[in-house]
Image 1: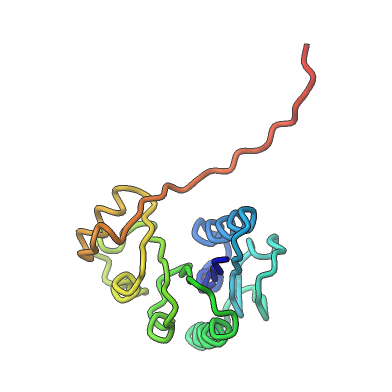
Image 2: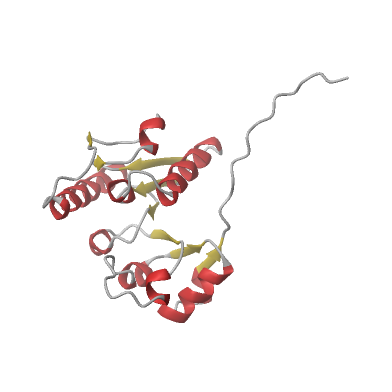
Length: 181
């Protein structure tokens, strides 16, 4: 049986957001298909994980990261993730966001999902997350559109064989069956 571990740095980045919701839903659907998967995060500020009661592993929920403690909390989160990976021994790790720190210390292959390359396209000077190392060292990359794949190849010269395009899904509410005449 394949064991998947979702690295949870995104849950310390955002309270709400599409990326964190995607990771939670992906984890839920893997479980529904009898694939062993967990989300690991030691600290979180995220709302979606409060609603998710699966056997995820975490220590502490914060309302927000206190000023001047951001680097410390991310370091703490990464350090505990490394320890948990050694304990859990997953077959593959899915990075929830670009995490160059973890990539240096993990021997387990990882998958990365790339949502867009807006920072590269708009030439923003302040690119908070250095994506290059995470992208280069990923075993496989999932892009959410053909355009994102094209941009990834253009900006990072990634081999096409290393990329899969998987469109984001939608949730449709279940309709109650009514007896209509």
